Length: 399
Image (tube, rainbow, N blue to C red; front, side, top):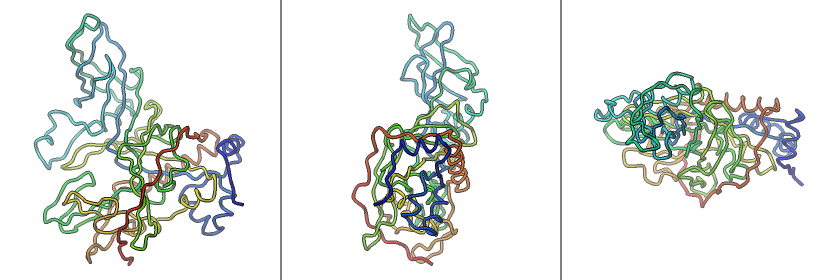
């Protein structure tokens, strides 16, 4: 009979300083050396990490009341519009929002300078932010405009709430057309001039629990350098399987997380405003999920390596049809990280948009938190929807 653990048992071991915690990198070697059953009997938690651009991010802010009071109907933070249709002094700043006078708005493919993600980074860094607001005026909120400077310590609440983060397994993007194109996957050179990808592979949180056997509402996570929580499945949550021509599983597909945390506890090195030429602004987010090893099946997926995990190769010049199966095939993360892949007989240089070094650092930080007893596992009150039927794609030949 294989090992069976509960969250309570693991948390008691964490409190006692006896929990065995490995990163998703470390557990691969342990399973290869000692086998699945023996490793499952030893290891309590596997930690994961990712640090990459995550457009569907933003923050709820409550500014507090001025005297006289104002019901803010329009708000700008460092010139970036924030959404105000919530309450008198509440706003939501989206990571991809841009100033209305940004030259990139009418200068494609110009370089975007500063957006909502940069506002969030500056807030977390404690920098002063210019707040401008207009109002139509009411009897209870008579003030019609305000201009002031705020810091994150001046406002009542700052809550990072990201509707879609930690994309399970993103595309490897290429361009078959005869012109350079500018995308959220970066600049793609014509005629297969380059290939960009944005998933940390064997450290990627949702690739290490593709069945969503442990991740759900209430899962405690590393978020932006602080502690956050999974609050729902993310938007565009389409978990599934990538399979080769023989029907063998070679990777997972498109699950996502909606996450929340206290922005005042976070750190700017883990929330970075980011710009993409010809596309826009976003926020690069550091996120890590602990995977409790409740049984051998969970460990089996947590120990999958870059050689066993694949990404779909997709042509972005044609609207990338059939994303999950990959309209140009599937390629292993080991090959992507080697710096080159072969597509349609051509050798193509690869580059990551996410940082594997930072993902590794997140996994190690989370490991240290757990080993010190500073971070207990959050048992989900409800698990997220798991994989749908798999889609089959041709695996590109290894070289």
